[in-house]
Image 1 (tube, rainbow, N blue to C red):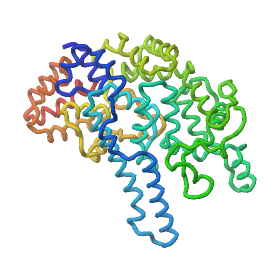
Image 2: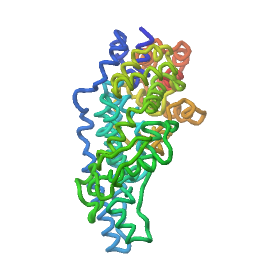
Image 3: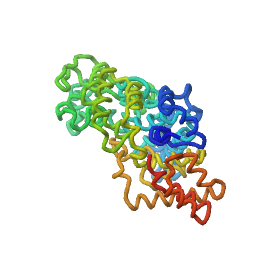
Image 4: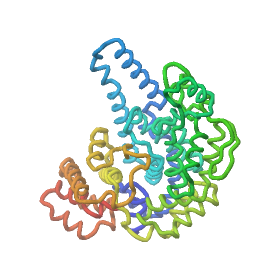
Length: 465
């Protein structure tokens, strides 16, 4: 069996299931390229979930009930107070369960890894309501449909999704020269209404150009003006922000800063929503964006310190193709650099858990167990803690404490599996030639089958990709 087969399954994919390596071994690169358009229809686990507008509307109804109860009663009933948190938590758990069931069962693991990669690149963090209730839907609705298209389209879809708008508070950003901005600041001198630069800054720093991409503070401020008015429909129950379909992207002309704006030395005279989308499309094709995206892609699929030759090659493909993402993925797969080393990446907790479920060919049905396991290992789903997303290098996930938590989880899995799985057979099935003699010997000497499974899951062979 070829080592390329193991690399395809474990570094490009999400880990092999029993039987996968034999089918991949015929032509590992073709196996990857054939996945780039993804499944022909959305997985059933996702189709069962409600959509973002429905959840936001229901969340608003619960919030309204809470406000009315507080106004009426000095001591609101505990069930009313707790209802919002329970509602958010329930939807968060349902979406996590669906995500990991799809990842575990997918016949398109390269495609699924790309979904996870871009979701982390355009990260939202489920640290404040109502983001936990819609973070998984953001990945399904904005990221998933666009990863095999053009980067500019993916960029716009991510920035206009309600999860991103709410996460970075762009619905609160009001152009000082807008109709509402001038009126509000004229009559409310005790409270100044103005720009919120969060979304503009993260687009430039984290989503396109990169921190050293050649922009300055003036570009951040001006770009923040450009995207004033980027909001969501029905953000409150009454007043000027009640219009639009609740929970969907809504452009609000009344709070948009009018006039021509200059970003990165280029003038944008477009009106309204068109102005922001024009800036995003130019940012998408900026050389700094090409380098930034190519570096992250190479780091994720090749090595923590990716070869500059590969980064340059991917960057050229990105620019020459007009940001065609499939062209980039194809160039990555067809390059020599990704195939030179069997193990060059340390699995994140997310990768570790998904690959374990795939190894056992078991689709998880307990979302709380998943969340608990990943939280234990420091990577709670959709909670990176900042717009930067989760780190992608070994130095961020190593260390004695982190390793101990992985071993603790591996032991729980081993005890659960008991004698139903032979760990030596499992190693051959999911690692093939990457199942080293050293690990095989350690597993074979285990006192029980459960202990052998624990040793296999905790081994360097299984923890690297």
